[in-house]
Image 1: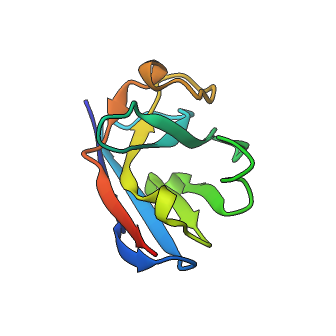
Image 2 (image 1 turned 45 degrees about the horizontal axis):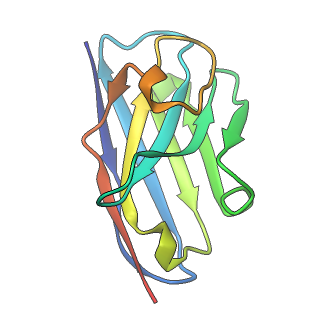
Length: 124
């Protein structure tokens, strides 16, 4: 079993930055893809970004690309999401997820393991 624990969420003013971290432990595997999703009440979980073992990353859409950066430290089993120029619409619970597969995916059901989530609130 793999455990994922997110940290780094909180309250920030619009235009500010946050860096989310995701620590993997347990039966961690090798060249798995990892991703970040977010969810607001009453809405489905939304893809944010994903990264493969080599560091190739994909992002949800242009509004996130350029503001959000996903990265990973394979030696430490850590994945990060740097979020800059935050907007009130970025307010959500952010989840870290991992796949057994090496391929990145934008589809939440294709992820095998999930963290408990960390709240990000952006005030206007």
